[in-house]
Amino acid sequence: MLNNLRRKFVIITMSMLAGMIMILFIISNRYDRYWDEYDTHRIVQMVANNGYLNNGSGEALALVRIDAESHITIDVNDTDLTNKEVKTISQSLLKKGKKGWKWRDIIYSLKEKKDGSWQLVFIDLESYSVSYGQVFLTIIFTVFGFLLLTGVSIYLSRFITQPAQAAINREKQFVSDASHELKTPIASIRANAQVLQNKIKPNRYLEHILSETKRMENLVQDLLGLSKLDEKQGDINFSDVNLSEICEELTLNYESLAYEEGKLIESDIVEDIRVLGQDSQLKQLITILLDNAIKYSLDQSTIRISLTQEKKKAVLQVSNPSPSYSQEVMDSLFERFYQVEGSHHSFSSFGLGLAIAKAIVTKHKGEITAIQDHGNMIFTVHLPIK
Image (cartoon, rainbow, N blue to C red):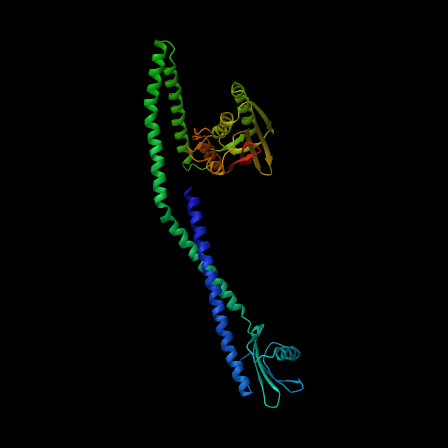
């Protein structure tokens, strides 16, 4: 989670910096170009007024005379244009009927003389080609600057996420310590309740105590399991697992439980789909999804589980008819202890099950999603195959 937070920080920071640099670059480029064009226009005006060009000026400039009968004489052509192109451009500029400024990439000045002829001076900006060396240096400095800023962002992300890391560590430590501390008193309560149950007549209050004690034991066990999943253990305990056999085994086990609830389970499991993972965790994943489907499906409904292979992914899907949930609920299904308000203003908690399922899938480098489709809640898990 912290790695994702750091990654998002770096991406957002670099995107903002890149956007700001691009905007500043565009503004700077437009500003420089404007003043370059302004200075260029001053040069062509001076040449047009004087009627000649100093030798060795180094400007990509064309000096043209146009008589009263529109005959064009080229006095100077230091541009990359041919004489024919210069004459064509001169005719176009003369037809514009302006004393000059800019036309396309041409900066020009057009001056009418007393005899009815015209003195035209223009500079073709395209003739000022940028050298490959300049382009290469610009690219080098841009890439270097971007990499430098990326390194700084990555370095700063460590400090930004330190408080979050400390808070997460404290949370994990608290959950682990609290779970261990709760195990003993809960076990003691259950043992005493069982002894009392053997000595007195059946009592619904005592049965409720035993039921809630069992639920608390399961909760503590889930907390401990989730705490272990949060630890960075890598995949050192992973091995070749036949996911198809696990699905078939657990589906068979849950068919009787679903039947007791007045529900059915239909399965469509492709044989011999194997993944690299931990057998116990994958069993826990499927158990959570089936248990969740039975618990939250509508009465007299049919639960479907399927396992297929798509390219290099094993696709596990569990679906069940369910009430319609808001998008806010769907976005928060995998959060720990998330609660959703029901139709009669009662609260139904999803507990830790789906959070554990997501942690297991993440541990196996997979992905889990939940969607609603035509009144069905569909959980889909993608796991890389062996």
